Amino acid sequence: MVSTRINIKSHLCEYISGKYNNFSEKQVHFPDNLDIYHLIFDLTEKRPAGVPVDSGNLEIVLPDRYGAKHPETYNYLGVRAQKIIERKLEVMFWSELREFIDFENHTKGTPYIESICLFMRKYGIESISEDALQKNYYRWRKKIRNPNKRVYNAKKFQ
Image 1: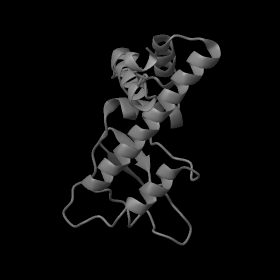
Image 2: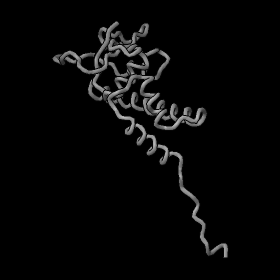
Image 3: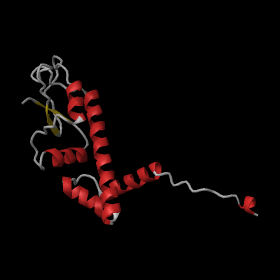
Image 4: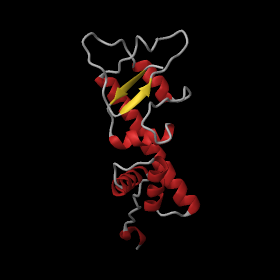
């Protein structure tokens, strides 16, 4: 297995390690039925001459698909590719967090902050605060769940 390292936000690294790696610092191997697996496969390219060995906080096992790009040759993820992967992982993180909060709150009656703490414990996230996650959830909820109330004109009803 050929792997490469990328640099992403620390809370995303902890999330991915907790979700796919059982909290270990080893390489992360994404299942081949996920979009992120195919995204990484599409973004790999031949390593340019003179480029140093990869460094970063997340080590990813490169996809090895039969009869396609061989990871021994196509083992480089450029800066643009790393940013694309980081955005994809961030979307996965926020969508799972929001779904988890909604499920816990609406089905079990768990308060938002406790749901966030459960999520953080589930994936071993320590580098971002509960407050930051809660504020992001409230901002998203206000934007998505349009809280615009009808404004009735009192003159119409007189």
